[in-house]
Image 1 (cartoon, rainbow, N blue to C red):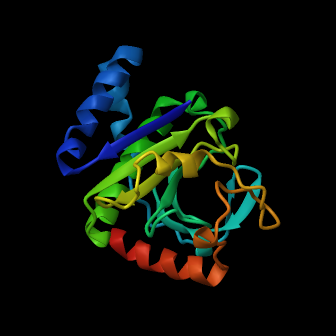
Image 2: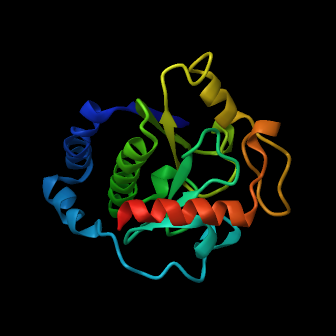
Image 3: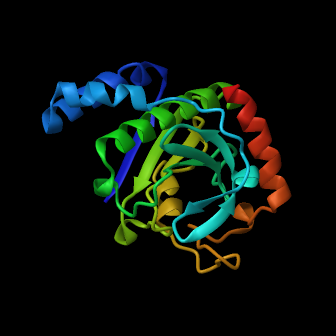
Length: 205
């Protein structure tokens, strides 16, 4: 299953209330309120390693955002500038396997990151997308939200974005597979990714 949202500023303001309704329907309003304390931006040093699926990666190179239960990481082969991923810290394959605290923290993190990216890149809107399972185009067995800055006319057809996300590249860069193989989406070096990571971290200071 693929979950995708196109957000602009007016839609973003209603996000928390939508989550509240969702959580109250599955676990009660009180249970939702208990998750509010989970979301916090920690000052944990961006050093050491973390897991993205089966892959052990460097925080110093890829992690630009860190909450209690989620990371924001840069993309090896972004579709457009600012295309990043938001992942739960716990390695979980499918969206349904996340607990409510993780769901709230993940989407609250995505909302915050998307808002900062929209301002930084001065774009018109954002796309938030989850490929939930191999049949949906998921190439790394770890839940992740694609957060993608969008501009009017950035694709000839809007559906091209989803075709790029669904397509699977056989190129693994020695470790992990990514979505599509093209000259425009070459694999970036650690130095390039770390440079972007350092810039994006400043958006959350």
